[in-house]
Image (tube, rainbow, N blue to C red; front, side):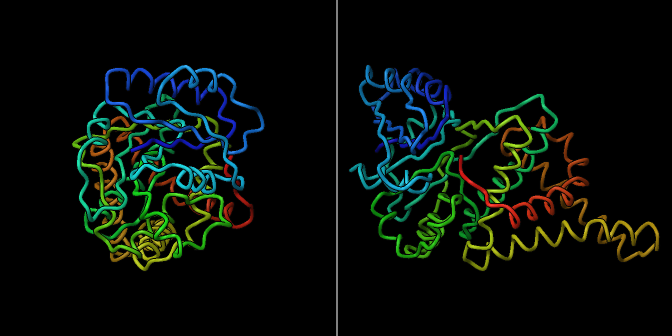
Length: 323
């Protein structure tokens, strides 16, 4: 077992995470942690000094092509661990995760995702984007439970190293900067079947993630996520993606028909759609321990169609890059 954390130009973020993990692992079984420098423009001297004085902490420069996918591939090609726990620099696991990484894993599983919880923020902007993430992440977890993998998140996931390489012949996404997580999941699903993808057996979210605070960074992040949708194979994925997009586009025409034309059918569909969204988002907020976002659900529902269309348009007319 090893932990792998790719990064590029994260500044103090890598050192802060190293200090956090140093405290977390102080009284626990030693699991080696590897920070993989993905061609940072400035050498992370502070991280290098910190990791040099601690057993099990390692800093490796990626010798592959630039990009998060290539940094991960380099790490898995370099290390000999059977299982790799991938994390982002802004991921903060709690002690629950440590015991799970030491327990036996179902032999059928080749990738297990960890339930994530966005770190709360007083920012209204962040609340909207956090709710967006919660809605996506929750449906991704539930899809795995019904053996229909849909979404993955590289902020915290456990994968089998040999299975990763065995499934590479399904991958045709190396030209896309984003999607290191979902493309790996779909490839393993094709190679080993639906039972190969699972969820870490946690009763509560064990990894907290932080998102950017600025609008431009948040927008760039979401644009990267959306840009890969057309390249992800699988009928279930495409069906859900187009269903969400169609639902967003239909929201306001249904509202207009209900109000201006007094169309009873349109009104019934509009109300049903509204109730379904409120019910689902409330369940997701409770399930991922973000009840503080429930107040945001109603205004977010009316903002979401504009947001989704704008993000899709941005992803079409611009080229997203991983930082």
